[in-house]
Length: 74
Ligand SMILES: [Zn+2]
Image 1 (spheres, rainbow, N blue to C red):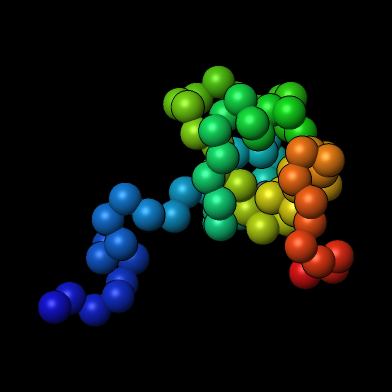
Image 2 (tube, rainbow, N blue to C red):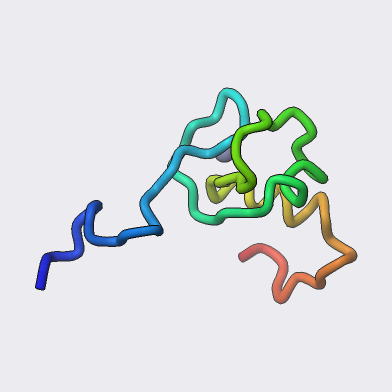
């Protein structure tokens, strides 16, 4: 078995956050159309938008209503 290194994760390799000017490590991937509900300036690149933790939180705030937050301040 290979160690759990960066190359060992197959499809879940880390991509930089898609928000222009950010570029932090992504923690979630959203469909580009979903991500654009909060970030209209995302580049048209692929169908998915990787988001870093901070921008994922912003996205959740921007789209709340569709989905209840489990907890505030996670
Ligand atoms: Zn980001």
